[in-house]
Length: 132
Image (cartoon, rainbow, N blue to C red; front, side, top):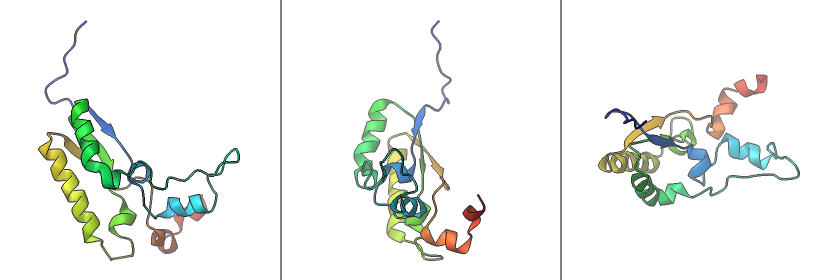
């Protein structure tokens, strides 16, 4: 049976900023430093991950070569608002360039605005995680 996808079918990939961008300093990096992910004697850390923050142009070319028409990625809150009410315009501009590049490659960007990570200051202001 040979089936064709409808023309508007979205075929894509998905990532998490914290897992691929590298160099992010947020609540999960705090947990890593505290050894809260330690298992079987290992204390894994994301660190630079695959350095997508610096290699995104090449990564997007790979998406195009893969033939996808959509890409779901997250915007790292700790990167764009490292302190309450203080926004990092350089990071915001990079995310905007990423979106523009995806559009120029005919890849529909789909952003996740909250992907389970928070800036350091968030838990000090709203320690909801302590009740878990």
